[in-house]
Each structure stands twice: as structure tokens, then as C-alpha cells.
Image (cartoon, rainbow, N blue to C red; front, side, top):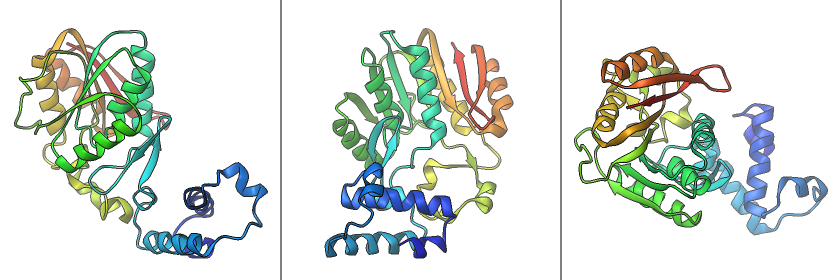
Length: 272
């Protein structure tokens, strides 16, 4: 397995993938893998590993191959109908958990995908009521399974945020979104495992309208946020200033932009 993966990944990535594959197939956590390194694998386990390597050699993301990923202490199902959650989104969730702990709130996650944000907030802010909106029926099915898997209640709704003002939903204290924010022109620099496998509708926006979803969600927030309600965005670091200006023009206040662990502008918080 190592030799096959070494042709495609760095030494560090190869070691990480091998550990995760062994843990997944053999149900052997990393701390036992070293102790049991001379353990012989069964023929079934070897066949399963070969099948996984074959898929990885085609640049399929490991998370899709294994069918799951870790996110903010949770295990979530992922498949090609949903975007694989990124560490930056974990930072957004952590930022919100620290800001909102102890408050009884209604929260709306727009564009929930796998449900990662909504489910993590429901788990770590048990006093909140969490709703989530998604356009894709298949993604909603995945999100529903993830909520049940992690033992939380999230109220899921299928809607197209670009067409639906969500007037049938109640007012919320918090709206959060990690909308599509990668411009089409950025495809040229993307890895094959992202470009060829992850859902484009969850990633890309037109080059001539990079704020398409931010602008629309901000408008929805004006209508569906309660007085003094909060809006949280994960953003494309290239458009932080533009998003801040747009929110200010729409009447939002207390607008702040925060950097992620890589030093990139990644989170915006604003109040209506």
C-alpha cells in the first residue's frame, strides 16, 4: 500500500493515509498499529485495502473512499453529493461555540451540505434550536443520517436560497453560512481530487459575481434575523473587504473579520 500511495502523495500524506486506512479496515487505532505492526492481515482485509488503494490511485478523496470523515469531534458520512468539510469550517464552528455558549438561541445554517456546521452546533450548544437549509435532496438525506448518527435534532428544509426568501421559517437569532465561494477561474489551480469528485454547485461561483451567495444570504438575514441577530460567514479570503462593504451597505453593524490559523481572512461576524 505504501509503495502505491507514495507515487501520488508526499511521505507525510502517505503515512497519514496508511494509518487511517488500517484503522478503518482493521478497526485498529493508531496507538495499537505500532504495537501490533507484525500482525498478519486477513485475506478479507487485504482485499479491502487493495480496493481502497485502487480508488485512491484514481485521485478519489480518501474521505469518499472511506465514506466518512472527522469534523469537530464528530464522525460524519460524506459522499459525492456533499462537500468534504474543511479545517477552516471547524474554525468557524469553534468560533461560534465560544461566542454562543450558554445562550438559548434559534440558529439557521444556510447551505448545510453534510450538515457539519448545524450538527456540530447542535451537539456543542445543546440549549439551541438548529435549523438547516439545503438545495440538494441527496445532500439533505446525508445530513439527516449524520444528525441521527450523532444523536442531535436539526430541522432540515429543502430550499433554493437564490429563489426562496425562507418566509415560511421563524425568525432566528443567528444565521450562519459557508456558501460556495470559489471563483470559476480558480479551477485551474485545484487538485484533481477536488475538481473531479466534489460537487461543483457547493464550490463555485461565477467570476463576475463572487458575492452572489453572500449578498443573497445577507438579504435573507435582514428579513429572517430577529432584532440584534447575528450573521456569521465563512469567506473567500480574497473578498473580505468587499463582503464587509456589502454588509455595511445593507445596514449591518458591528462587522468584524477574523483570520484563520493560516493568517487568512476567513470568518465574518455582523449584527443586524
